[in-house]
Image 1 (cartoon, rainbow, N blue to C red):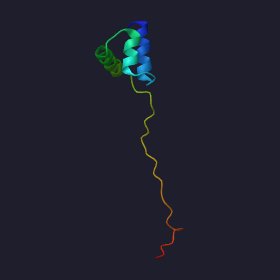
Image 2 (image 1 turned 90 degrees about the vertical axis):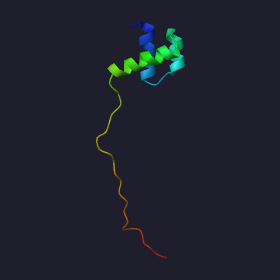
Image 3 (image 1 turned 180 degrees about the vertical axis):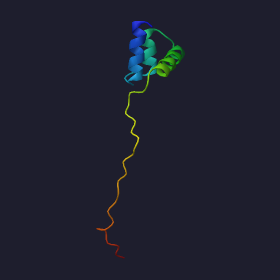
Image 4 (image 1 turned 180 degrees about the horizontal axis):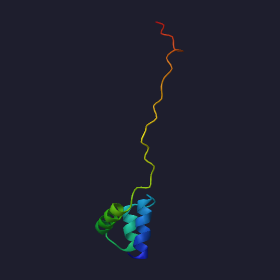
Length: 68
């Protein structure tokens, strides 16, 4: 992979660039960039943290008076 294409893929993967900007940078059409980026994503795992447990907040109803 050319250096320009690799840089464009990394910028797309990090969501710093959009597809038209990355395609223009490395001289590909938008369709070619989408196909190439799809292959890039298949071989690179996501970099975000995936939490297994969700945070559940509880409301304290003891302090609330139910007056009409």
